[in-house]
Image (cartoon, rainbow, N blue to C red; front, side):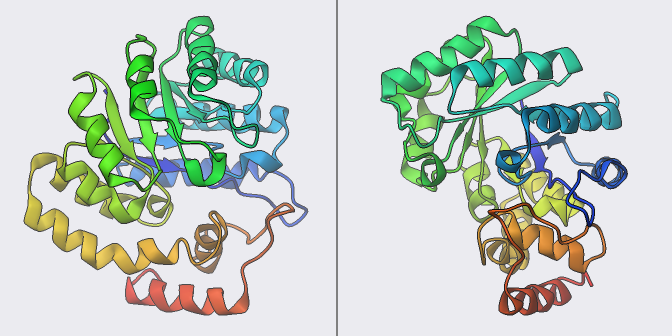
Length: 291
């Protein structure tokens, strides 16, 4: 079962807007050195929509090779086109990824039956653990609990990344899911309470900056150490909130640039954060002793 903290890795670009391969390797080594449970390349935070399929696959390959079996790699290979998701998921399996993150198809807004058939097709055709990604705010469709429970019967569908923000739905999933099926929060703001109420951890944006602290907080929650988990949650909450001052991944990549970890380079339609956001980020980073 997937448990702990998995970093939704940013994708570093150089000043020409090209993939910065050396910087990506440095980020992987940093995460592993800080004791992270695993890595999630080319998800929302990794700017996958502005990468070509070839680039997406290359990033997965670099992260798998950089990890070298030390940590689990959950590769973002979802798409709103089932055949494209299949192509990338097969490539991720061949590369050696430990699992695939499959976002709910976005823009075309399938029915619940369409969602079921989409995920089942991938699970049937690629023998790789799948983490279903529910993020209605971006996909435009919610994966309902009944649909998820149908999917959870498939041996290759092993977890859900829950980023709907709907605690009631998450509790419903936790109360009904198979014992070996994991629920990972997709939101740092509520990762601690979700874990305490029976979740298994988080796919985190903030852990790009503070992997060890995120592991400590979620580790405490998994052990039932409520006081430690709660204290860390409220200490880190200003940082969690700052990660969504603007659309993810703008704040986290900007914060990493302020810390000297990456260049503040995005590909359109994403663009640099406003001056006001940068000043707020600097204030929060100083408050967390990160700069």
